[in-house]
Length: 145
Image (tube, rainbow, N blue to C red):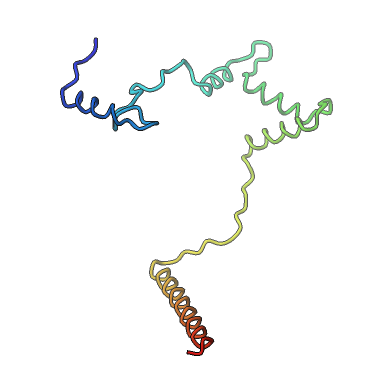
């Protein structure tokens, strides 16, 4: 059953219907989808964790352990036809097991107090003003006047 709208809101909607902007089909502050997207069962991550924790009846290992063993076999076996897949498997194992290696950041970070920053800006401004004054003086001297 539709709710009855109060008169001020109805008037506002009627007024704004005439001047709607392209890309803004709804009133300001009103969502076009107030309940959001409906949930559709388990999220992919939850499903992967659930299946990964299940035990394989043949081997007695969890599915996650089997995946890791398969990756390890792919990374170390001589029977793998594609060397690139062995390198990818090794990278996955190393990244997940021991973490990605730290990336060095070049350069130093200098901490400056607000007072020092203000002094540097003032000095730069004064230097710029001196350069401008010198340029004006040399231009006047070149004009002969």
